[in-house]
Length: 155
Image (cartoon, rainbow, N blue to C red):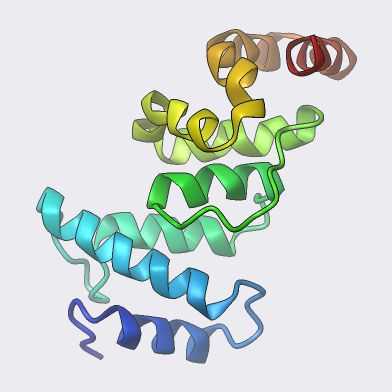
């Protein structure tokens, strides 16, 4: 199968492969177009299945069971999908953990978190205190982390 750099063909192939995917086709088409251009412009090479490594990582993450509304919001902003979603931010340790692990998969996105708060202003405190939250997530018990998260998000 050789879909080259045609986002429509990749989108069609994706939905043939994952017919029960709960992500709308328009979102995925935008994602494929952005991913192809990101891979093209950064000179990333194609893998054996024709996808560049970045696109493979994105699909693997999207299809994993480690996604949530907050992490998907970060994902949408980072890949350039337009703001058409409700603005969810992490509400507890589990939700923050999904965002934390997303940024472990895509460490280059951490430095771009301000893009999230630019589109979704109520993320501003979270983004400004992200490093502090990461340390708390790594070291505190669930209750203490929840308290810290609430303190940052609700003042």
